[in-house]
Amino acid sequence: MQLPLLIQIKAKGFAVLFVCLLFSAFSTNILANANLFAKANSTQVINPLETKEQSCKFTNVVFKVDFEGARLNSCEQLSQHEFMLSTDAENRPINPSPWYAFKVESSLTQDIDIVLRAIESRPRYLPKISTDGKTWQSLPFSVSEQNMHFTIPQSKTPIWIAGQEILDNQSYLDWKNELLLKSENLRHVVIGESTQGRDIHAYISQQQDNHEWVVIIGRQHPPEITGALALKAFVETMYIDAINPAFFERFNVLIVPNMNPDGVAAGNWRHSSTGVDLNRDWHKFEQIETRLVRDKILSLLGEYSKLVFALDFHSTQQDIFYTMPTDYHVAPANLVNEWLKELKPRLASSFVIRERPGSSPGRGVFKQYIADKFNVHAVTYEMGDNTNRKMIEHVAKEAAISLMDKLLTTDSDDFVYLDDKTGGTKTNSP
Ligand SMILES: [Zn+2]
View 1 (cartoon, rainbow, N blue to C red):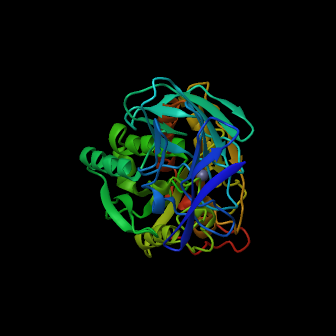
View 2 (cartoon, rainbow, N blue to C red; view 1 turned 120 degrees about the vertical axis):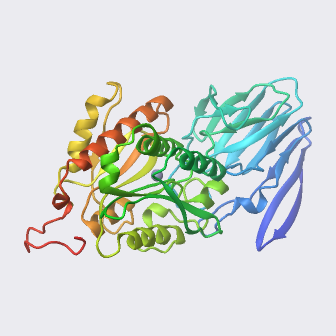
View 3 (cartoon, rainbow, N blue to C red; view 1 turned 180 degrees about the horizontal axis):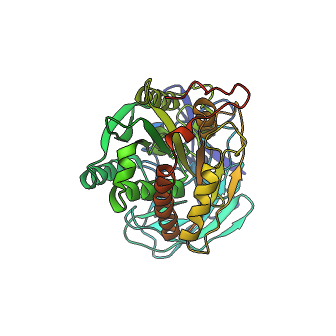
C-alpha cells in the first residue's frame, strides 16, 4: 500500500505537481520523488526557467538545476546511493535530442549510481563530468532502451554532469570580449531581443566599397555543442589565427553565433522558448529570432549588395555537410563541391567528408531560404555529437581557410544566377 503526499502549487498559470514523499509499506527505502517541472505534452510549452530555483533534495544528495542550460525533470531515490533521474522535452513533437545538465552535491562517502531516463526518447548525448562547469571529461556509461546508466564518483565539492560541454549565454559574452580584443576587423552589434528579452548578438566585418556578403549563423538548436565549437573555431580562424586580408578587402561578413539564447538558457532539447524549431521557421518567419536575423541580412544588403554564401552550424550523429544540389537554382553551381574537394587533402585522413545535397522547399530550413531568396549556396555544417574536439577545431580551421580562398577565386559575376529559361538574372543581383 502506498500513501503519496501530493502538493499542488499553482504558479503563473502553470499547475506544478510536486510529489514530495512517497512511503512504501513494502520497503525500508525512503522513496523521495520531486517532479521539478510539469510534464511536457503536445499542447503545453514548458518553461523550465520558471522553476530553475528548484532542486531535488534528498538526505545526503542534492541535484541542482540553478544554472543556465540545466535540464532535469524529475528525480527519485532508489536506495541510499542510487537515483533515477529523467529529462523531458520542452514540448512535442520534437527531434529526439534528450539534453540533460545538472549539478550534484553529496555528503555520501560512496559513489552515486545514476539511471537517467529520456522520456519518450532514447539517450543521445553521452555523459560528461566537470568539477568547475568548464573543463569536461567523459564518463563510462551503458544504455538500456530509454535509460542511461553511469556512476558519479564520490566528491566533497559540487560536480557538474551534462550531455555535452555547457556553452551557456555567458560563455558567448566571454567569447565576444576575446574576439573583439584580438580582432580589429570585427564590430559587435545587438540585432534585437529574443522572445524572452535576451540580446541576440552579431558580429560584422564590413568595408565601405565591399558589396558581397557572407553570413554565418549557429546554435539554432541549443544542445548542438559540437556545431557551436566548430563555429567558434571557424570564426577564430577567419579573424584571429589565419587572417586573409584580401578576403576582407572584398567580402563583408555577418556572424550570429547564438540564435536561440532562450533555448540555451532553458536547457531545451531543440526548440525556442515558444516551443518552435527555429530551423523550420525560415519560410513563415513566425519567430522573433528568425525575423531578426532575416531583417538584419536584408538591411545590410540594401539595394546594391549581394549575399554570396552562408553557413549554418549544427550537430548530429555524424559529420555531414548538407548542401544544395548543383542543379538547384544557385550560383555558381559547383562552388560547394569544389570547396569540399579542395578541403579534403588539407584534413587528417581519418576525417570523412560526407556531402549530402538536398533541397526541401517550404520546410523553413535556413540553407533553403538562402538558396531560394538569393540563388546562392548555403551549407548546413554538421559536426558529429562525439567527434573529437581537436578534430572539430582542425576541420573548422581548414574549412575556413579553404572557403576564404574559394570565394576569393570566384568572380563576382559567377555568384549571379542566370535563369536558363529567361536568360535574365534573378532579382537578387546587385
Ligand atoms: Zn541542428
